[in-house]
Image (spheres, one colour):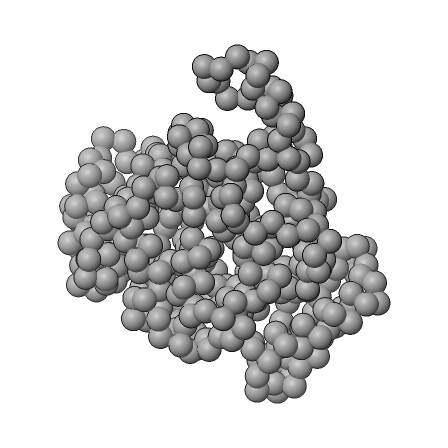
Length: 385
């Protein structure tokens, strides 16, 4: 068993670990679902839910709408879209170097925490190798001026940067700017009912403010545990992409409650966070592709016990996704529209029971009222071979 070093007698520490409460996979599953509001939906404004989740995966621009629908008692996608258009909700690069949807406050506060990680991630790409000898700080500075007044696509940004760095690859310059300079992926992209290419604008230009660094790594870890705990240091590292977190957790240890998982690994949690019984009912939940609940732990056994991969569907994020049955990833779903008809096709592995299929159909019908309210909708459940 691996334990953290301290000044106490090692045998005392091992004895202490032996006395810790253990949480099995089902208990961890229900704790995660409770904090993600996937056991009981919440009556909150969308931006408050996004803050509670510490952002939402948004590589597919419309996926947060389905993620919010599954977690809230009511959601008006046009209101959420207006929040995106107005900068109340913001899409920017953050955890793991991927695009997330944040509240304006979190976008400004958290982006500086992510800056070193984003720089390292860019440095590991082929784009960085193609910019050997180019001053990245200067690329960032010039990009800031180029996207201050209006957003630019990656192609447009690269072309304009190349005028300042003759001979440097345009695409590499654009990626360097997007990873190093705080930028918003600007609307109309990710606005419900509208379409738009991916264009980038500086925080100052779109939000009228600079990233302020109003959050600490300690705060970030505590918020992660609130939304995703109990969790190991490896889980926190995987979710955030940040390094040096063992030291942070050790600093926070006196404020945390410590458990062991089934394999004897230390899990950290907020003392008063919800930890329902492993027998707590878990309703069927439709999730968008790459929902945070599936991607935020190094060990995903609590929600993906068979280690299946999470599919990444082509599209905007509101026509396909994954399905939780009894709290676990058991199926995928896709919506096809043909004229006035729409079909929600659910493919399960393994085959669902009759009761589970009935529950899926009922929840699927509700989903179609959200995604295709003006269509005649059917729900079809099949099992993959």
